Length: 513
Image (tube, rainbow, N blue to C red; front, side, top):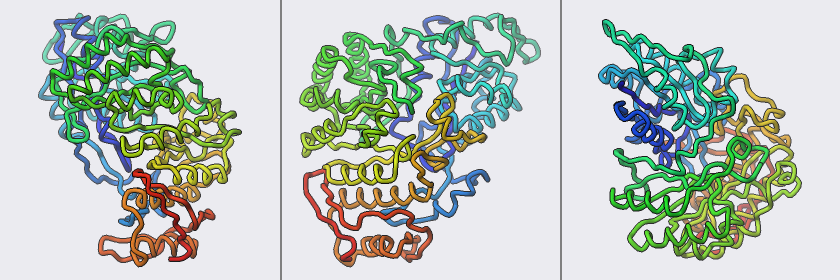
């Protein structure tokens, strides 16, 4: 049997290429090699070459056009819709040339289901291959798939266990005049699942071999998981309610790091949802990383480290070779945090920020529009992080099916609108123009944090200051010409204390420019 595991291209305004390795598909390939060793398994990562192409904006995003204008100023937002990855034409040619019996496609995010379905429909026009789709986001989107699905199978749960089960059931195939006849225990279109949502311990005992190459910070990189699931139950997150928390042994992680080191990998990103949770485990884990750091390895955790867990092991993490820290503040609003079952961590964020100056960069994320939040809380979050030696990560809230607190805000019928770039709907009475204004303000703060205080007559500073005074955002075109395009709907601070990542403090008064 010939099997293709396909990571499809992404269609959006933006994409984070640093985390593009399809780790789930790598685990499935490893599981297939062990469960069905005679099976040929190929992986096609459509995004591996980091290519992008401007494509037509889907009509459902037309309402964003007044906000996402072409802009080359330091406080610009998004403005171009792209396909990140190879074209359907190239993918279909690869599929045809490979003569695959089964094609497994990952669909990891509700907002991208429509694009995955378009790819499946195209694949079905050029091949008789069986097509199966998997990914955590399928569980709460079954109604969508049953109504719109073009694939033969939809799997939710741990793919490293479910996909071998599926292939085992269709392993008796006969090929007649190029067409595959399948005898199996499932009916095409059925979900393949167990009575309870499958949660495999495969990742606790195995790790995937690598044949593809990825790079980050100029070094060969790889993604690793030390655990799965999360002990917390934040109401706006699906992970804690969907996966029980499980950890790999430190010894087993060490084996994978040794393997990766031998493959030339020098930058490892841990994709965990909750790293450094248990104290004794964290100490052993960081001692292991320190050993490999002395050999030249460095580490990141771009999915985020719980700030108070990191604060307790900060010196150990710095010694272990973390190249940066990614933290989630979410908000400082205690009422909003309580409403969303989220712990307060601002003190820990502050401790990490000051202790990391001159050692590693720190990026701290806030979420705009959490249920129960307010504009005043959001601006307080901005002021707080502006005064710390960190860069500010800004995440407009996006809605997900299967999350009651988000469903109460009103889920869009069109799944494409369930993404952060859609600026669809927010808690706290925030409107998308409010979120856009705060986002542009943060963009300018980060620009000043990175580059320092500009000259008094710097055009970017002048037009940013004019924007705050005149209550209309200015933008700059390719030729450097400025014009207005979007109302400033929020009373943004014209005086703010900004601390650069190097510790330099700047008092900015935009009203004086």
